[in-house]
Length: 316
Image (cartoon, rainbow, N blue to C red; front, side, top):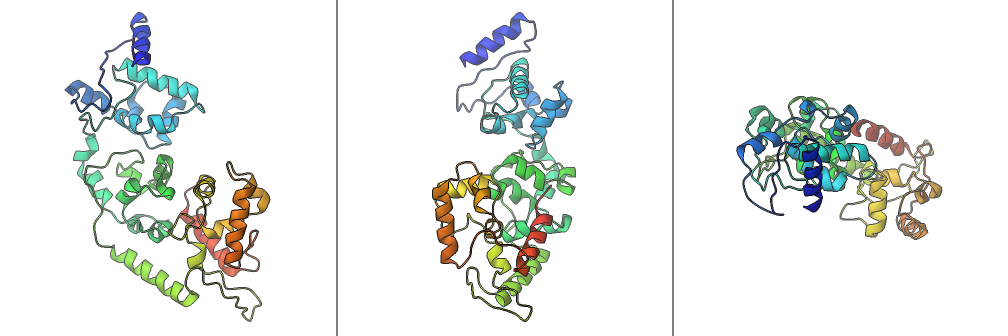
């Protein structure tokens, strides 16, 4: 609060202060109508520097009210100029630096937009070819991407990448607020169900996850690494790693077992917070499943297929 008042005083002296509103922390007081309008301003319409707009856009923020959703979580010193300009603009508008817009009564304009509301319930498979990873994780509708807190969707910039294309054209974006109580449709879309049935059939023929039998085919190659094993997430219920190791791998965007087994020791040790203790932990689990690090697609045909599938399911 002191910081806000001091900054407001400085802007007042510079004749740049538009107004000030102060709410107690966790206050449920409703904002006046003019502040509803301020929170509903589009970022693209503000007189901010282009690099600041680009910095905000990467998180999928379209409105002033959504800035608060990412402010404390993502605003750090990697772009101090943008952060400073954003804070100054909030004060210039008369808005507090800390606020829970929804709790304070803000109603995002897209809550009443039927196009946006309908798009939330649209099946992902209908509008993008990059649906494999979503469906393997039980994500079938665009709204679930925004709602999900799984590691694959935990960061707003990840959500924004997955919403590029058709979803973005309909007004969906990573940092948007979903209406209270929003849930996806109970039924799995028909096209998704067909996809899942096909996957299940492939897994049935290939074998269950982590059932590693060394089978040599006529081509002399090892076919024991099934797609179901390779696409098993490290953060699944079968996760054998410590929290520290799991978080370090996730932050390095190593999500699946198929990615991990292709890593070399040196590559893993370069990951932040991943030390030799974590490396021993990984190698121990590899041994338990008769696997090892540094595997390549040369001797494992499914690894080549896994890499191709992963490439098309991950946004650039």
